[in-house]
Length: 255
Ligand code: DGL
Image 1 (cartoon, protein in one colour):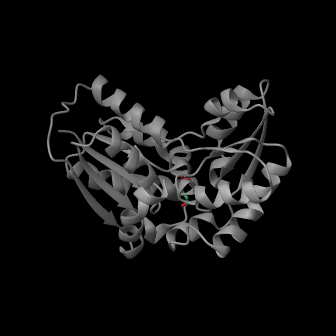
Image 2 (cartoon, helix red, strand yellow; image 1 turned 60 degrees about the horizontal axis):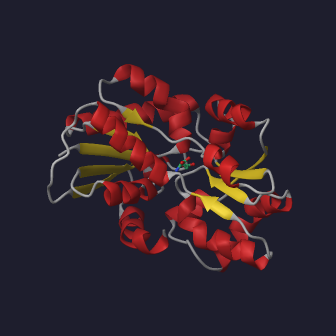
């Protein structure tokens, strides 16, 4: 059985944990919510890198065979430094523009992400790759992480916060929206309701299933044994644990 460490600034990475457990139910998972430092979106790359190293040390101490950085912002800031510093493989997040390019009919792809992700070099590279094929429009999900951390996935407050960032993408003609922050799939039902209210058909892309497949591929390449077993999940956090336990208990109903 493999031991898989998964980290995020908060509960967002649970969207990746859920897909991993669907694909690999027998493994041992250690999930770390860095909620004492959440949101990462406006922190410096240096600060996020230091947090990712501290959390990776905890995973290694607990016997992790592989570490999933289930956070777009932390991937953009820290994954190169992590890969240089540890022997275990790391899996990161990348805004899923490629599948969106294949899906769009309007030729306009929307990306919702944090300010940190959209300002990163890694994002600029992904965007550059597809600039001939589609028009990419971006929006920072202002307040989305806070909504999700406080458990406000549905309802009038979630709708009014989500509308501000989503509407400009839909008005620009996006018919596919990439969820470029692992917190955002928690709000998918709210996004779908807003799109319906505006009378537009939109697909929202959650990259978590692709990240789960990539984790399986890397485990196989590293020769890490995947045997039958009961599987387990250990939930850790740097701050209070209530938000993590609440999101964990609801995730299957929300995705
Ligand atoms: N879940 C995160 C991401 O994928 C980070 C959100 C934040 O802390 O700002 O980018």
